[in-house]
Length: 460
Ligand code: BES
Ligand code: MN
Ligand code: MN
Image (cartoon, helix red, strand yellow):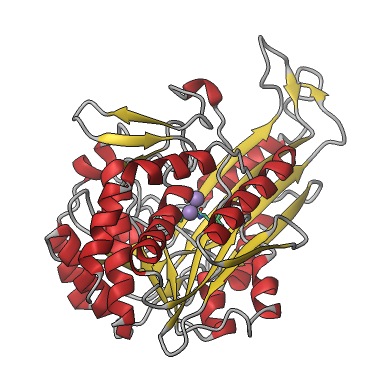
């Protein structure tokens, strides 16, 4: 790999400018779920297309029924071609008062242990991570005049709202998006020193459950004792979701869940993830999942169920003696193995309806779900990426599963026939989706160097 050392040098030299470019992008509040930020989402897409065009990519904004997708091409005849995917949208910032600095005024900060971090919404998820790849490309282009592989980038603006319009976009543009492999930078490292390749992602099924009882809110003195309380009905449903051993109690839910191979479990045992380490960082210490499972299984290879929010009745200042007419909850499942979101929807609906009294009703809104992803352990790029990452970080690369979801990865296989290499540099303490999101400067810098090495290895 003739030019790699020069490219890595250029990355080191240009680090401050790389940060300035990332900061410019982070200043644009591209919150995809909130319609108030529609223009900013477009702004973030335009900023990116401008940056990629300046590097020599043929970049454009492609409209969808939602936020635009940025597609950019820089082909290299005769060389392998990769499709790089990421997202420019970010999560909402509430509660705003918990941020130490405004979320869209990026800055460098120093943690109590001396680590330098980039602080802003999107610093990690996913603008910082996407920029590691782009900066690696830039360094290659500047130093050598070209890239080691042909590249198509597809950076979307709706990942945090479920990538609802992207599958149709991929389907409609499958000729244009053709490649040998897909690359994604939207996952994490094993720990601060140990690089990781993610081989599995959990799927997602998401529901809203609205329980309706009386046709209005009632005086709890006049009707209390006789009128059914929807908050109680809903709470019973939520309480029944798990049994005392932490298992999900919905009949048929575990259909399609597979046991991990013994070798994988042995490896996981060696990683020795303790409740103190993992839960300690969020102020907890007792794992709440299935009691007979390793902590690492609970967060990577087992399915889960969570109530994400619940409302009903009077929650304002002071007291109000009332029996609400309705109560609602948002309930989601992380799926693994071959679990089918449609089947989960059916068994969940049956479970809920069985708990609704005859004179009450329930509405169940099903959001679009995604299946879990398991990537093949024998992908040709896997070994190359492992070696490249180990060279950069000076230690073995581990293969892990991730509890999070990236819905479009399944479509890359189904629609484009592509396997996906998931490499990312996020850390467990990055506070993604939370106030005070950050990305370690080391993740950004060595992440960029890692991609330069991976691109070189794929191109060689
Ligand atoms: N980057 C995350 C997914 C992720 C997180 C992967 C941690 C690996 C480790 C992504 O942006 C995300 O938040 N996805 C959502 C998807 C949902 C909105 C459909 C998720 O997992 O909740
Ligand atoms: Mn992400
Ligand atoms: Mn996210």
